[in-house]
Length: 113
Length: 115
Image (cartoon, rainbow over all chains, first blue to last red; front, side):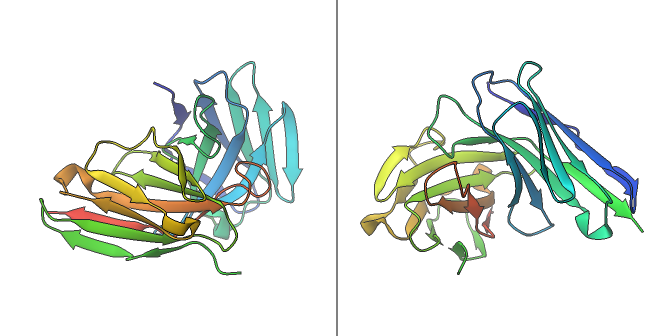
C-alpha cells in the first residue's frame, strides 16, 4: 500500500514566523512531488512542485526534497494569517499514469496575528 | 481563462439511486482526472482520461462507477446504484500535458451525500 504521511496538526505559528510542513512517502519510485493548499470548502490549489533533490524557492515558499530519506518539506517564510489552510503533500504513483497522485491527509496550518 | 467547473456542487440521494456528476475541464486540456475524498480520509485517485480514452482507471472502486468522456471534452461520472460508502467529495482536475507545466488544476468538487 503506497502511502504519504503528514502530521495532521494543527500547526500553529505566529504571524511573521517560519512554518515548516513535513511529509514522508513510501513509494521509492516516485519522481514528482507536489504541495497543495486547500482552504475550507475550496479546491486544492497547487503552490509548489519539485522533481530534484535539494531546495526549490518560489517567493515565500521553499520546497525541500530528499529522495534517499523519502522526505519532502515545505517552508513558508514570513507567515501570514492568509496562509492559514490545510496543506496537502502529494507524490506521483510510479506504477500509475501521469497525474495518478497519492495524497497525504494534509496538515492544518493556523497563523495567529 | 475559466477554471475546472463541476456540477452539481452538492447532491443528496438515497441509497440505491443513481447520480451523475459532471466535469468541464479547462479548455484545451487533454488530460482529465477524477479524484474523491471520503470523510476523514485522504484524496484518492479514481481515473485518468487522455482525450476520450481511459489512460488509467486503477482507482475506480467497483463496477458501480462509470466514467465517460465522449468527444474528449467534458466528463461524467455515474454512480449506480449508490451506496452509503460512496459519500464524499468528488474532485475533477485537468492538465495540458500531464504532470509537467502545468500540473493539475482542480475544480471545487461535488459533495455527494448518500442517505
